Length: 170
Ligand SMILES: [Zn+2]
Image (tube, rainbow, N blue to C red; front, side):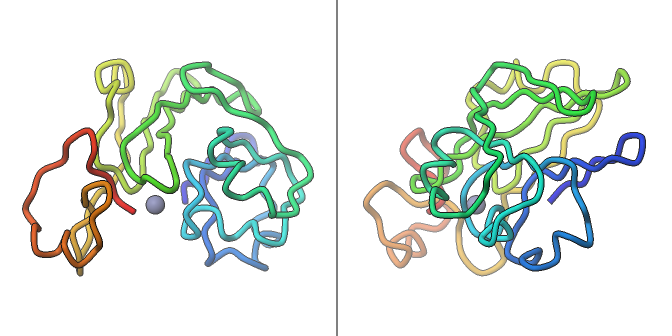
């Protein structure tokens, strides 16, 4: 999770299981999701008292969550939340939970945020003009890359295989 604070108002990027029943304490004004994995969206399983922004692919995977204020994000179409500009870029991460990273701009500063990352197809556009990149793509206990149709066990045997267009984290 990333917590952006501007003039005492908060925008969260992602809200994992850890925040289930704890959201009132943070009192965010808006929440933006990168993807539907529970460690990024599971904190919303009981809803949210603020608008939530996500792509149609993510909404389809968390349709059962009782979120009332659903905003739809389209990749490569910048939008504004409380004076912060967001632009979503599809990233390679998961076959079952397609993900985006966000280019986030405020007061002349631009950050790119992409958790659980394998690669950024539109890397040049995504990273152009940024001053900070926040991302991760590592795992301590198992490789994060496996091929479409492969089981986690077969991916383990192939650890060290590099990413291709068909290789993404489950
Ligand atoms: Zn994930």
